[in-house]
Image 1 (cartoon, rainbow, N blue to C red):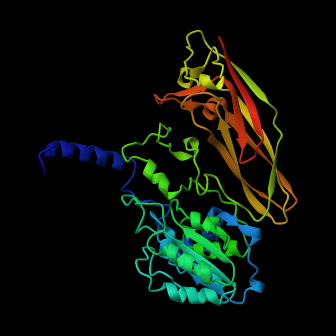
Image 2 (tube, rainbow, N blue to C red; image 1 turned 30 degrees about the vertical axis):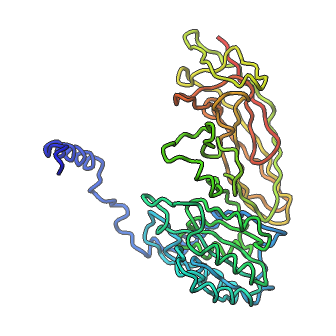
Image 3 (cartoon, rainbow, N blue to C red; image 1 turned 135 degrees about the horizontal axis):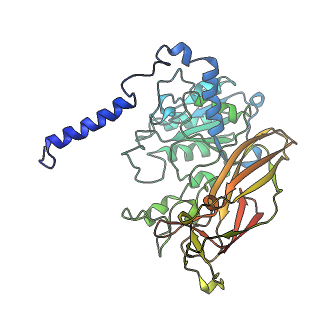
Amino acid sequence: MQGKAREEDVDTSLRNLYIVLTQVGFFDGIPSYESLDKKDLCTKEHIELAADAARQGIVLLKNINETLPLDPAKLKNLALIGPHANATIEMLGNYAGVPCQYSSPLDGFSAYGKVTYEMGCNNVTCDNKTFIMPAVEASKNADATILLVGLDKTVEGEGLDRNDLLLPGYQTELILQVIVASKGPIILVIMSGSAVDISFSKTDDRVKAILWAGYPGEEGGRAIADVVYGKYNPGGRLPLTWHQNDYLSMLPMTSMSLRPVNNYPGRTYKFFNGSVVYPFGHGLSYTKFNYTLRSSNMSFNIKLGEDIPYRDMEYYMANNTEKPPCPAILIADFSCKDHFELDIEVKNIGAKHGNEVVLVYSKPPTGIVGTHAKQVIGFKRVFVPAGGSQNVKFEFNVCKSLGIVGYNAYKLLPSGEHKIIIGDSPTSLPIDISFQK
């Protein structure tokens, strides 16, 4: 004890805490679940649910000349290499319960045919080269090589920040040596909970395909193999931007600002507009989708009470932006009930069934100082059979979807022409906002 708090004050706080815990039933257990045991939890249906969740989360980052999916009938020998090639508990990440079982990548790929397994590194820290040469030899004789690399909770997690965005230890050297030696296509699979700078693999055409599996859980190995062999068509999207490693040198540890200022580049897809390894929302498929926006242009003339003031905003006047007479209103000042709807046709123009995640962004009027470039306002996953189409509908509140956060942390609704963007589509839908008293 350092004498900074009195014992009776600590006792009072603990007493209040335990009163609340007792009131909410924290110590009562969960009677409706107490009779359940492993046989109830680890059913075939639940295990399949774990596998399906892992499949849905896998992101296809690269696929040169449609290398994936692989055809097991044409592969007599597959080399499975890397510190995650036989991963089990590493697939769980943080905050995981007790697994029913494990399906490692070695298990998953072995179900499709002959596999030669070499670890390449004894763990993800990969602090020596002892196991690299056996891995190189295995790749020389394989019809295809699957490299499973990445991170685990020994190098990333709460209270365990990484020093850089690179693969740890000699993992990169393992990949480079296998690239040189392999006679067949190389598929790189990354397990991690955060971004990894794999620029060298992205730009090297000898690495035919790249998958990110996150931490896929207990059935992760089966899920990865199912995606590689085409039993499941990947439809995942990156939930974060994958920056180049030198991005870290631009970020002072003392600054958490999102907006770019001078030599400070800004953070997140909303504000950073420099080059990246892979952008937020990136994700490929074994098929192709086309979007058709069926909604028409919209405008909202929002009527305000006389007591609601207009709010000023700063504009880049050098860009010939004409400052509107009523720049913005504070969203907290009024009850915003206006809504707009989107109707999007998603057509599968490829030869394979697939899932598509439809991402909807809003973009504020041009010329406003300090606002985001775009922001996600909604997304839906939809299954579309080959040659088929699905209509996807969204409904958005005008203020929640088109509002921006000012420097003072208040949320404002700017007047002017906002734009709705669907995924990476060049087509946008204008929405004009004006105010009237």
